[in-house]
Length: 222
Image 1 (cartoon, one colour):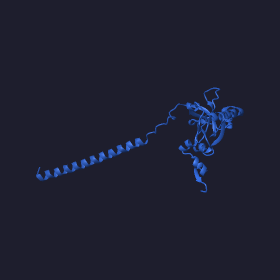
Image 2 (spheres, rainbow, N blue to C red; image 1 turned 30 degrees about the vertical axis):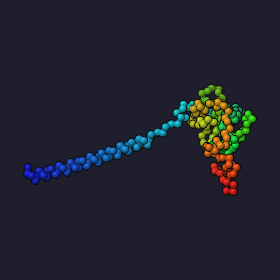
Image 3 (cartoon, one colour; image 1 turned 120 degrees about the vertical axis):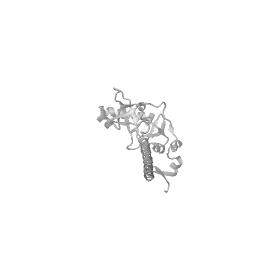
Image 4 (cartoon, rainbow, N blue to C red; image 1 turned 120 degrees about the horizontal axis):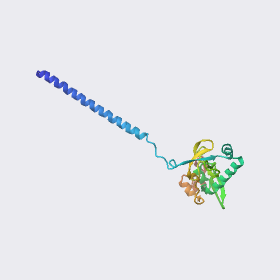
C-alpha cells in the first residue's frame, strides 16, 4: 500500500475515533441526566410522614351533631338521644377547655363558637358543644358519651383533647382513636388572657382599647 493510501486510511480511522468519543460523551451525559431526573421524581413522590394520630389504631364510633340526627341513625328514641345530648353538655362543662373571657375562647375556637358556663362555683367560657359520640359501635349497650367541638363551621368534629373524627362511610358512623374516650386527670384550669394572647389571641390592652372586626382589632375611632 502506498504512503498516500496509508495516510488516507489513518485519517479516516482518526475521524471515526473522534466521532465515537463524542457519541460516548453524549450518551453518558444523557444517562446522567436521566438518572438525576429519576432520582428527583423518586424524591417528589415520597409520601409524607404520618402524624402520631394517623398511626394510632382506629375504632368505629357513633357520633351525631344533634338529637334529631341521633334518632334517625342510631335506633334510639328522640328522648334517649336528647338525654345523650344533655349528658354530653354536662360532661363538657367538666372536661372542655376553659377561658377567662369570650375573647380568649374565640381566639382559639373561632368567632361565635363559645358560650358562658358555670361549674362548681366557677364562671368561665368554653367552646360550644357541636355534637357528641354516643358510644362505641362494638360496645354493646355502652353509652360512653363524649362531647364534640368544631373550630370552624365546616371543620371536623373533634374531642376536647384534640382527637378528630374521620367519616366511617354512613350517616352517624365515624372512626376515631381510643384517645377520644380518655378523660382528663383533673378539671381543666381557666386559661388566663396572657396564655391566650401567646397563642395569637387578643391581649387585654387590645380588648380595652379596640373592638373586634372579623379576626382583627380595629382601634376606637378606626
